[in-house]
Length: 358
Figure: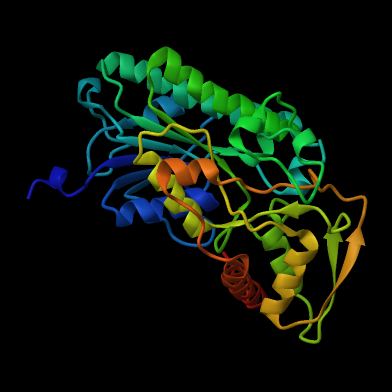
């Protein structure tokens, strides 16, 4: 059988060594895609199932020029194939970015690094794809960009009980961090390349994605993973964990499987976005701690660190637009997602104790 008939489509997943990217690779492979994964590092918690995984620096335009070219199904990045036989990918998923939780994003100490690295990657991807499209005289590659709810204005998120995160509320722009400004600039960059060069793009604004195989220690983890880790490390009789801020700040959190499903629906649609992908189950950080305590079966005291970085006072996804255009909505409760995440982190801690952690 001709190997070219074995796959439905081809996809390039940038940031495939990270949390969301590695989950997307698994989903695409299940759907019959040929997938090339690219990142500085391989996935930390499981082996990649990408057909081909290339390690390299996406801030290097020469490297990006090479990875966006598909040369055949054999696994071919290093193969010497004449340029005339290079093909474009059907889809590109751009998850690669410099990012982390509040301890990395909101201190101000990493602003220049975050902005330089992430903007450079996005410029490289779009410009190298534009040049390749021009050379091929085609424009079929659809590019997904993973934006963030951090781009929403701070003034719409001062009330923890009534944050406004409708897509149209983004302007006048006033994100509360340089990370948010970079995300806003980059989504505008994708739409500019669509308008001026015809590149098909899809843009989502993710709201706090969490779940197994995400960063759970080391300073770049998000709130659900950090709280699950802290509770998991408490003795069985319970104890106290540090909570950043007063715990009254609100957020919504979306489980990874639902994020992947919504992203795939967006890519398969004619809707470009930008569109929120998140849960509307808004909780305070205090409630997040209490949910984790319930899952763990422990009695957990909250020890507030009032001078810690916390971000905006309130943020919650508004899913009106995605329901209207894609017929998608979240279906899993926060407690269900926390249970799965807590159990996975407990396993990681046990492996760490036994010296078996990667």
